[in-house]
Amino acid sequence: MGDKNDGLGLSLSLGYATQRNHHQQPSLKLNLMPLASQNKHKKPSWTDLFQSPDRTCDTRLFQRGLDMNRVPAAVADYDDETGVSSPNSTLSSFSGKRSERKQIGEETEAERASCSRGSDDEDGGDASRKKLRLSKEQSSVLEENFKEHNTLNPKEKLALAKQLNLRPRQVEVWFQNRRARTKLKQTEVDCEYLKRFCENLTEENRRLLKEVQELRALKLSPQLYMHMNPPTTLTMCPSCKRVVSSASSSSAAVVSSALAPIASNPQPQRPVPINPWAATPIHHRTFDAPASSS
DNA sequence: TTGGATAGTCCGATTACTTCA
DNA sequence: GGTGAAGTAATCGGACTATCC
Image 1 (cartoon, rainbow, N blue to C red):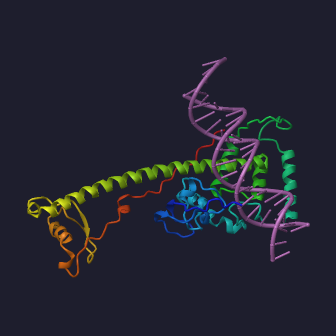
Image 2 (cartoon, chains in turn blue, cyan, yellow):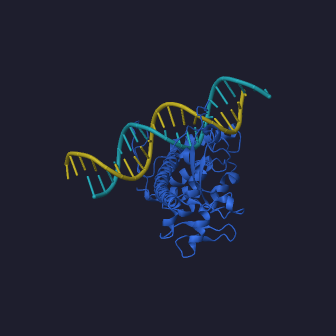
């Protein structure tokens, strides 16, 4: 039914490892797996592009991983603790059979019938879409719960609704909208990050091209080489693993050895490419959840 | 065991309302 | 007081899973 995306997808995964594996190394992966195999239940979206091929790190976990809302570790284990296994449905996997669930459904209807919104009034019967502003307390309680886990199981939903004197549906909608806002902000953060990352790469590329040109020029006119300052080059010594800048006084030898024909040296001291990613520090950015107005 | 029906949730997009400058 | 922008509660439709029969 849902597999409409069998083509080769190209996803750029940008994120931190999940809390399940405790590596906090930032990673940027280019993934050429078919999108359908990565997530067969969703149409590809912008966030899918950020999705790790690792199934333990689906979009939500990714959001949590980089997340500005700093979901505590409990979230990662939440599924296990509550028996909620499906990423899609909290109720579907809510333990208990349908007949048992029906009671909850009835409760829900009862709640719907009995609960009005927080304060006054004329909620009942009015078919027109009235927009209800949640009170500050309601918003903050919801926010607290969202920080603990960004999805609700039916029990929690009912309890929250009862506590806040809202309809369960309102609680559910609030969580959905809150997730959407979180995701939107996360996307903005990711875009900004990628933009800067791209700028860094462009700059690095420009620098390297320039360096290549200079090296070629040197090779063509070795007599000039003696009178020129060597270009700035970072070279790593394979044996001692030390990075040597060719701009330093002793660097000419490194440069010349790098330029020397390999045939003349049975154990060529070839420069080891420096990882360009290392030049762009990745900071785990966090920011506060938007204050819900009331 | 298989498959259709049903119920529930999720998400993305959108609408409609509220608040504020 | 009118207005536009921003924020957000609510709705819609499609996709998906779990369960029942």
